[in-house]
Each structure stands twice: as structure tokens, then as C-alpha cells.
Image (cartoon, rainbow, N blue to C red; front, top):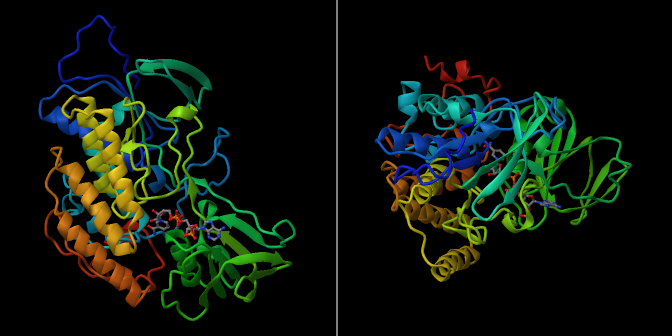
Length: 460
Ligand code: NAP
């Protein structure tokens, strides 16, 4: 539904600051729509909003599609989701303060749910918020122009191939940043006889049963894709790290070696002298922040880090405060951090939060960036991002959630992973919203081959 801006001469209700245009309805976009719904249900006048969603459905990366490459309209596939993905962090750490897992599932569920369960949870809150009316599905924004007062947005309806331009006062970019793959090049790739893919295109580990797989990277995708391949029967899995090894106690059949130098025929040659026969090379080499629809001066340019520069409070574009970004940082915290960000942006747009002077704003950004650059390990990073969430929440009416408990959970989770990378998903955590402790799952993660919601929730 496209809601047109009232004519300029029409006085707006005092708290309806402006019209907002928002891109995408993944978790961040849905957080923003939820924040508006919450304000409205408290009797406040919310701004007019249109959410442009290029996919057929909402949920962002939590949708699964078999497709890779292009969609049926020729657009690049947004999705980086694969079958058998289970949460890699405790669900309690990402719980919504205003919509608990207990409320959604009507019973306690274990702490590391598979994709479909998390998707159901995210969409459950969205459905309950009556916000679908704001979303234009199958609609891609092709360009944004700063008109001095706001933005002229050009968008294309993919189904009927119609293009339109409309003006809005504010722009919230919630397009995610784990969608456009960073794909490095290695000598020997062109003549490698096997399969080369990026984790963005990884769909089903079954494909690699009895195969020798090489995985490049040392972050969450490398860890999880490598473990998936092992779990579903790959013959060997060799992980090539670039800077720091993950250093887990890998099970038999898996190893971690230093950096791939080149490919020689069907062999991966590593810098530490390891030579490994391979049938498939999976590049878990991360993603690019990619905003082709934005002009250069509005584009966030950053690698995947906890505090990207030029964003006040991690969300307000320093040089044009009508522009906001959600969820653009590297993430320990996810859904409830997106909520805190959304509530914060909402309150700026609704004139409930006043931005400081340009100098103070720059100082605040600088302060966070310097702190981030001094972080030395995962525990300090958890502290940093927890403090950031607490800081945002202190300024808004996001319902109470126990961030100290979440901080502790993340610490325990890190320890569990160090103890045993195959069993950390079998642990239970308590909810920072309801206090409920997740029950043990009926099957350990390593043995659970069926990731359907029905099987997962069948706790008898
Ligand atoms: P990422 O965290 O940005 O990590 C990118 C990795 O690529 C880094 O380890 C980097 O290594 C490595 N890299 C880049 N170029 C390389 C090269 N030429 N050779 C070797 N390594 C190279 O991206 P990600 O791992 O794809 O994770 C993205 C997000 O997806 C995370 O938020 C994660 O939690 C999420 N995820 C979730 C699940 C799950 O829930 N089960 C599974 C997978 C991913 P350096 O450190 O050396 O730069």
C-alpha cells in the first residue's frame, strides 16, 4: 500500500513528524514497523510510511529459496539462507522484549531453533502488528535522489514492470548486509574441475556427501557451513583461515589450516604447506555493504564491523540526518538490537529525540569508533555491543529486557563453543524477558537431521 504524503499546506499533527520511506522488510524493517505500531497503540500519531520489499514475502534472509543467481524477474537473489540452518546463538539472546518466545509458541522451546522456527517467531510478531498494509512487495527501489528536503525515490514493481518516482521526507535503509557476496580470486580457479561457490549460494549440505570440501574463512559462515558439510557426510572438510584460526576442537575429518595460496588442478595448496584434494571450494569470505540505489554521498562505506563510521548512535547518517540505517553493524546482538535501533530512529523521526549539534554528534561517533578499535577479544566485543544496546534503550520506551543476562549468556555461549563446537547447540539458556529456561531438545544437534518446525516443536 502506498500512502501519499498530505499536501504541504495541510498541517500535520504535532507528533507525526514526516513521511517515511523504508526499504525492506527483513528483521530490521519489521522492527521499525513494529515500533510505529507500538507508538500508535499508545495513541500517538505516527508518520505515513511505505516499506518497499523486493522479495515476494517478508522476513528478509529468514525466507528460504532454492534459487541462486537471479529471481524470476532478473533481480539478484537476496537470500543467503540454506537448508538445515539452526540458530548459531541462543534464541534467548535475540528475543523481542515485547513478544516473547513463550507468548508465540505457547510453551517453552529449546534454545537453538532451526530456521523455520525463528522465521515463524519473527513473522508472528509482524502479523500481530497489523503492518502488512504498509508494505509494497515485489518492488525494488532503483534510485534515490536527495531533493534538499527529503528524497525522491524511484521504484519498480517487478510484476508489472512499472516504474514510479515519489517524494518522501525521511529514508530508513534496512536492506541488510549479508546478501551481496565478497568473492576473492585465486590462481587456478578457472581450471579447477570441481564446484566453486560462495556461502551466499550454499543451499544444501547433502550435495557434498562423500566429497572433499575446502571452506575459506574464519567467521560464522565458515564455521557453520563446514560443520554442516561434516554433519551431512562430507568425506573431509578443510578450513582455510586468512588471519586468525577459529581454533575449535574439530572432529575427525575436519581440520583448519592457514590460507589458500592457489589451486593446482583439483588440489588446494595452502600457505602452511598443506595440499588437499578437493571436489568443492566454498568461499565463506563474507559480504559487501552494497547500496546501488543510493547516491555516493549517502552510501555507507564500511567493512563488517561493530561500529561503522559516520553513523550517530549506529543509525543516523552523519551528513544528512533525514537518512537512517538499521542493522548495518557486525552482530552479536540481533533482533532486540534492531528493535532498540528502530525505536531510536522512530523517536528521532517523531521529534521525541532531538539530535545534538554536529560537533557533539561527531564526538559521540568518534568515541564509539575508538572504543571499538581497541577491542581485543570476543568477550570485549560482546560487552561493547551490549553497552551500545543499553545506551539506545535508555533513550526510548522499548520494554524492559535483561541485557545483563544476555551479556552473561553470550559469555557462556562462547565458553560452550570453546569446549565443544559439536555440542554447544544442545545447551539451554534462560529468557531475559520471561525468565523461562529453554528445555533440552529431544535430539542433539549433531543427530537432528530433520529441521522442520513440526519435528522441532514435538517435545513429547
Ligand atoms: P563475516 O562474519 O563478515 O566473515 C567474513 C570472513 O571472510 C572473515 O572470517 C574473513 O577473514 C574471511 N575472508 C575474507 N576474505 C578471505 C579470503 N580471501 N580468504 C579467507 N578468508 C577470507 O561473514 P560471515 O561469516 O558470512 O557471517 C555473516 C553473518 O551470517 C554473521 O552475522 C553470522 O552470524 C551469520 N551466520 C549465521 C549462521 C547461523 O545462524 N547458523 C550461519 C552462518 C552465518 P578475516 O577475519 O581474515 O578477515
